[in-house]
Image 1 (tube, rainbow, N blue to C red):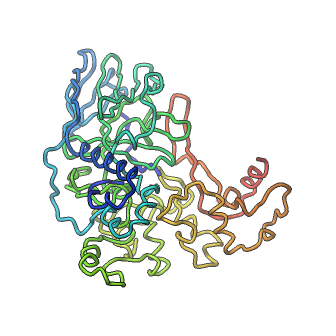
Image 2: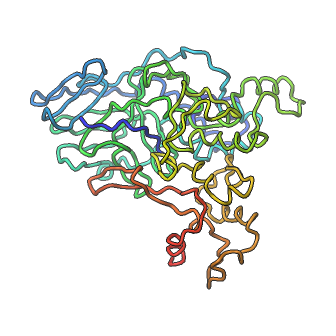
Image 3: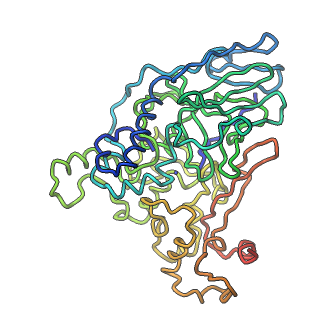
Length: 461
């Protein structure tokens, strides 16, 4: 079976312990968070109803791939088919070994931070970083599950998928010739800016689903790198993927073995400020202390070290030098990650338009001391607010008359610098297969420049 093994991360949280914070929130919000907490506990437990799985019919080829814990089911020996890490006719198993195998180095989760930093936490939970890793629940999952809207048909008439809801569980049902089987949807990767892709547990291993929900067009589609016409459910989730969707996880070894109870989902406070246990314990014991103890404030770092915090996930596809989560804010990024490919500065990858390297080529960057937070407030959801971002451009470019196209009839140019100078773009490196053809979701290019094609398109609108 042809299955690309390229790294995926679809381009930004866990609700593990909210009890201490719920009393600080207004009642409607508290109720919402109680519901999510209940669903989070469900993810770690058992499925509400384990369905019966049929074994493949005798005319299908069933073969266990030696030494890989993968089963192949196909119609023809040399064709595509089904890849699953559990025995055909069985159901993925929830691990009973939930406890971490290693000591947590001090990650406590964003809810602990929210006990003191209430306003910041209240706004942060609406951001893409917080939402980029979540449990699958009624309130977090996108897409339609009603008959007529929940089916994804591949280019092979014998291979199709249905997205179904059963009780509190969400599943993908695979139709492969005359054999059907189901796989639970446990975890969401992706903040819904572009898409949501889904993971599931089999024992203590995490795997990706074949079908992703694409926000553009509200449609079900093949996951990035998956070949249309296959039913692939054996792609493992390595550490490098996890660390751009999680704050913390206990890695047990192999490629994709994790302690289920260890996950702090979403890219949250401690990925930018460092593990917070010592800081939180100290300030709870010393409430009158004014100086922040044992915590990193990114804007007090050098410019390069500050930007490299974002570069963990927004500087192209960098491979790890050691295990994930060893980087701490203020470290040299190159001590923990290999440099991306030399020609990767112009490429979109599965989740990132390589913002760090593209921005660094910009005259705005070279001629100033700007950093990522010059334009982005990581504690607030500002997604799609071109007017707000354009106002930040105008803090340096103080006059609209500086624009070479000024004046324009009926257009206030200062209201949208973004679409002309940082256009959305598609690349071959971010391709999703579908029966209608290839789909290339666009991402915002962070090379700030004069782009005549983008300008003409903006003015034509």
